[in-house]
Image (cartoon, rainbow, N blue to C red; front, side):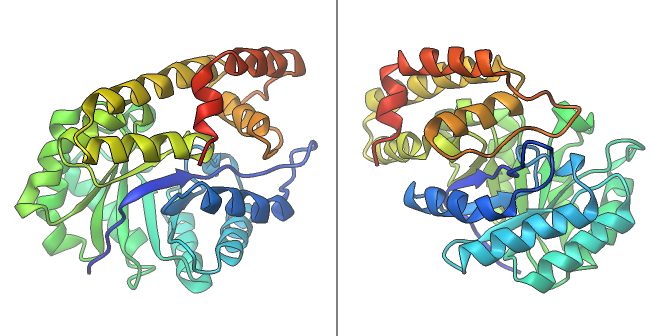
Length: 304
């Protein structure tokens, strides 16, 4: 099975009303904003989308709304990982039914696989439920605590995971990321997942990346990629530095909550977070608005 993503894939937010219920109507505006920002694809119900905090029914509703709003203009990758493999398999089947282009899954993170063969057995359950869809394993050791050698996963894929096309690699080990890119002559699509290190990933061969800040900084990163491809490394480094300053200002406000607040400041309100995440307070939002407004790069990032 062949499938390859190039460019920026936005890890989308799940919009909510003030009472915490889903605000599916807002998804159309989110999608249009992202397409206007030149993203190459969407990654739905991942960490940024608070997927693990949603019920299975809510995740299905969010995925269906995103696929319908996109109307085939860019690929939609659905994160279906769950602590229950039965629920993960259900989400995979649903993604295939509604017309998503690919699925992805983080490993079960409560009762954790204690070896690579056990992880592969878990992924078999998920991928067999949607055999027609390309599959990306979501490598997220900072949250799951699972940090097997991803080259060994790729090596086992031929025999055990025929729909595996790549990895969403969200870890700061650029050396291991490069090894995965180069595995078997570059056979697999390895998407980089650490926005603040995108330039480092590009230098070792990254072609695609999935990230939270691509929701509101995509034009800046597009210029960074263009500068890198033009061998203008000074400009590429300057643009990466600008992105890092913005990221540092945002993530101080409790990670995903700060990211959702930044999206609101950019003009696309995705509402509050779902507990246990704590939504940014009004005073914190105003402070962030002022801090970002003082950064020339924030205004520049909005320029398409």
